[in-house]
Length: 478
Image (cartoon, rainbow, N blue to C red; front, side, top):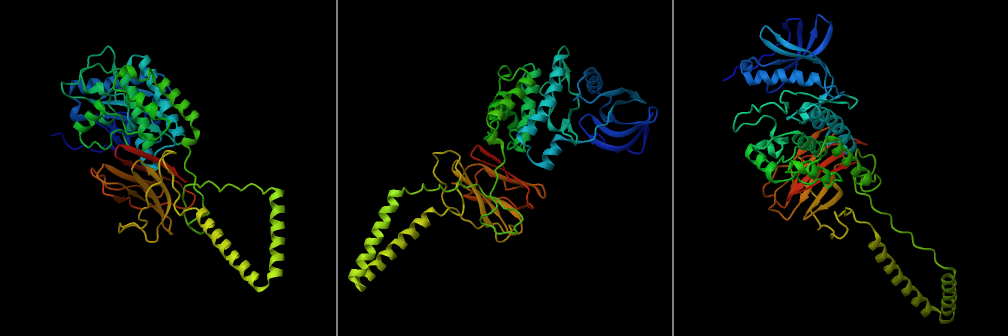
């Protein structure tokens, strides 16, 4: 067994003073370091000593330096130097301040589609540059994408990159990379070229939009491999679903020819369906009186304004009224009682008509125009940790399931999912203040289950993701 990795911060390696451990990967560690000779701060990647004697590992490490240094693209981190110091292999790179994309999604929740496509476009440009140079990255995933505070993205870690002319040095039955994003051909004897990077990049786009990797419900390598070989990711009910289907096609020949084509198709899809990508804007004047911290509900179409009555009808009504007054005057008290009884009947009709036009407490929002309204549901959560006093403020149907959003007077939101039961399902809810909260993941969901509550202060948005029976609902609600 290899010894536990050691944090070398505070030590020196040749001209480099190691100051802070920034991260660890399968092949090595990255430190923030000072190059004392050139007086600059750099990112210094060191090969793990436990594997430094492995010829194939050393070969991959050296290749990373040559590959990354040979590419001239703004979205690939520049290489300053590489080599060996006292037997320790290193790469000296520009230090980029930012978060990896996986952390961005964990911190911020699923990205708005235009932002997601913007990041994928930058990484796709780096991949296209590598592919034109005859190189395949082979490990495209959120952890290998760094995003700075301006959303400028960098593709890192070419340690698994492979020149087309190189011999594949993975051992029989062993694949390198992250299973979650690996193309089907990576699990077979078929050659894995640039199309494998397109597949992985599309998987990254899927995670940006949904908040979870493709086939996230698969929990072991065998299930993940089977999903890559036989299934497509669950649809997101997004205009980008068709883009994801093509980018993650099982046959490499059916995918986009390059990243630029993928991004162009994604932008066209968003341009054609801008409304579908906008967050659900919720009216703030009904249900919950001020000063509630956060109010959400689906917008209700205003009742149509009745057309003005024609002048001829008005004249008729005036004439009828005059005749009625004349009858009352002639018949006396009996006629007065008759008029009073008619007035009561009319008031009852008007009250009944008013009750029919009053909007219901929970607006119904169906997934299709022809779908019937969801059945009535229990409106009181049964989960003990949920805040008291919650009321339903938003509702939508999702196939045979119904999703209801609750709001408490103290500003907490949670989800209820009501189902026929028996199918796989789960629900997640996110807010900036609380992060992600999830229900259990059911292989046979009960007829009613809940997420924990998240705190959503005033004028903030939440994100919900619900899966049930193979369908996915992904919605931002503000």
